[in-house]
Length: 493
Image 1: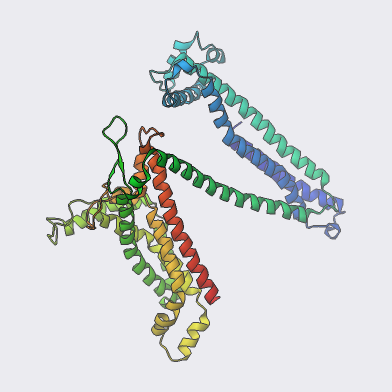
Image 2 (image 1 turned 135 degrees about the vertical axis):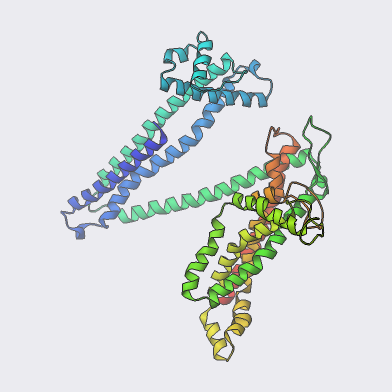
C-alpha cells in the first residue's frame, strides 16, 4: 500500500480515537464533566496520540531505511564479474532501479505476466521488447544479471511494503485500543498528554540538532580526506584556481583565495546597496510613515524576500548586465570601456543587494520599534525635534541590533549561489575591478559536484572543503550577530 494511503488511514484512526476517547470518558463520568479528572478533550487527545505517534515514527523510519537496505542487499548480490569498479556497480544499480520500475509498469498495464517476470532466463528477449513497448528505455549494458537483480529488487520492495503496511496499521489500531481501554473518569489524561507533547517537542529539537551535527560531521570527514590528498598550504594560500580532472589535463591547482576574494567582494557590493536602502526604509516605516502607508508598504517591501533566487539571477543576466554594459561598456553611454560583458561583480552585487533589502529593512524595523517609547518621550520633552530624536536617541539605541541585522544579511549574501552563477560569471580572479567577471565559493561547489565526478579525487572532495570554509565564515558572522543582539538586549530591556 502506498505511504499516502497509510497516512490517510492512520490519521482517520486517530480522529476516530479522539471521538471515541472523549465519548468514553463522558460515559464513565455519567455525563457530568465535573466528575472527570481532566477536560474531555485531553482524553480524546491521549487516545489520538497513542494511535498516531508510534505509527508515524515507524512509517517514517521504515520509508527511509527500506530503500537503503534493499539497494545494499541487491548490490551485494550482483555477480562480481559483472562490474569492474565501484563506479560501474553504481551505474549498474541505476539500471536495476530503472528496470524494476519498468517491471512494475509492465505488470500494472498487463504488458507482462508475473510468470514472465519470474522466468528471466527464458524470457529475456521478450521482456526487453515488452518493456520497450511501454516506454522503458533500456541501455545496451542491461544484461540478464541486471534483470535478475531488478526482479529481486522489486520482490524485496513489495515484501517490505507489505510488512510496513501491516506493522504501521497494527501499531495504530493497537495503540488506539489500549488507550481506549485505559480511558475512564479517574485516568489522569492531562498530565499524560502534556508529558507526551513534551517528549514530542524534545524529539523535534533533537532532530534539528542531529541534522546540524550530521551536516557538520559529513563536511569535516570529507574535508579531512581532501586535506589528506591535497596539500593544505596550497589550498588555503594558493592564488590560482584551476581544477583538472584525471584524464582531462595536468595537475590541479586548487587555491581558495580567488574564490574567497570573489565571495567577499560581491557580498560587500551587495551590502553597499542593501544597507542604506534597507535602513532608510526601516527608519521611514517605523518613525515617519502613517499607519495606512505602513500597512501596505511593509508587506510590499517584504515581497522581495519571497522571490526565488533563480528569478533574481535571470534578472541579473537579462536586464541588469546588459544595462550596465550600455552605460559602462566601450560603446556605452559613458564610453569608458570598463565593462566588456554583462557578467561581472557589479551585476551580481547590485541584484543581490536588491534581494537583501527586505532582510535589512524588516530586521532593522523590528529593532527600531523595540526601542522604549520612554526614550523618545524624554527626548521630545527636553525640546528635541522628531528628526533630532531619531538621529540622536533612537538610532544610537538601536545601533547594536542594526549591526546584528547587517551581519545576518552578510551571511545570507555569502551563501548565495544562483545570482552569482548567472550574474557574476565563472572566472576565479584576484582583481579590484568591479566590472570584471568573478566567481564565489558557492558557485564552485556546484560546478565541482556537477557531471561525472570521481568522489575519491581531490577535485570532487574539494567541494566539501569549500563548504566547510563557507560554514566557518557564516557561523562566525552569525555568532557575532547574536552576541551583538544579546548585548543590546541586556542594555535596553
